[in-house]
Amino acid sequence: MTMHGFDELIAQAADDSLSPDRRRELDAHLTACADCRTQLAAQREMRALLMARPILPVRDLSAAIRATLEAEQPWIDRLNINWRIWSLRVAPVAAAIAVVAVLLIRAVDTTTPNDTAAASTESSASVASALWTGDVSEDTLVTLLLHANPEDALSSYVSEKKEE
Amino acid sequence: MDADRDLVTAAADGDIVAFEALVRRHQTRLVGYLRGLTNSESDAEDLAQDAFLRAYRSLKGFRGTSSFKTWLYQIATNVFRTWLEKKRSHAGLSAVSLDAPVPGTDESMDPVGETRPEDRHVDRDRIDRALAELPAEQREAVLLRDVEGFDYREIAEQLNVPLGTVESRIFRGRQRLRELLR
Image (cartoon, chains in turn purple, blue):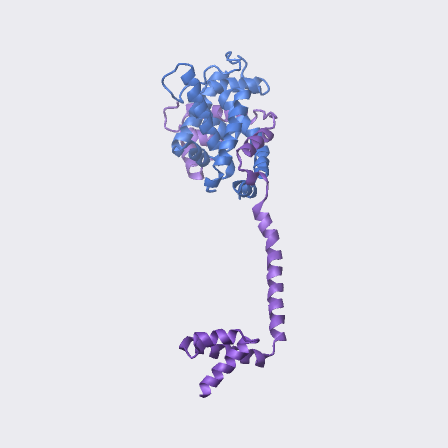
């Protein structure tokens, strides 16, 4: 210990990580303190020695670590599917399928004449209304359903009932 | 920016190949750090492997507020401390303290040589034997600063101590090391 309260500053000064303000504070002390100058030199010497400590090659640990982790994994994860990449690859295909489906539906719509579709919708609505309001009895309904074309027969029956 | 970020993200999603790449990237220095702490090559490798496995299992909890390397070394330091406690416990030392050298490693514990370090080329084994004589808390701080190059704030985070404590440990660690290497 230097006993001068500058240990921390000296440690940081030895590796040039002192802020300018703290460096000035230390320099002011060092000009008058030979002990602390010696300490600073010793700290620098040890830092240089440690920085020069050779880093030796080591045995590759990755294979052993991989084997341990794979043994811990649930079976689904062992398939090694990268779900992030898999999702990104499938997304454009799904989008293409959706576009084709929309185009097909539109193509079917355009082959149905609008007026026929409107008449069919109106007829269906009136039949539904008649059934709801009780204008068609259950027995009549069964008879009409046994007809060759039950929807037309039901529409005609409802229209006649309305005219009455 | 953390150079490991993409690999860490992939590994956190369970990509073992990405984690393997992280292991290969950091293993040499991490084993070197643990070699400095334990004074044993075989223990250093075992502890590094343990640290990597713990890191992988905890990756989902890694918030990325520090770099992956800082976080990995924090885990490795904790693994070392647990190992040290067990070692001391087996050695029959009831008081578990970091303020003592490593007992009975598998390396030679002969006194360090008489030659002054500035008079000879760097002898790694000699430095490591001297490091093993330092109290563990000083050894950690000195290695993290002077060998691994972490800044003081990162070391304070890794060791979970105030900045002033890190400065003090580094100062005293270097001072003691110099006495041992004389």
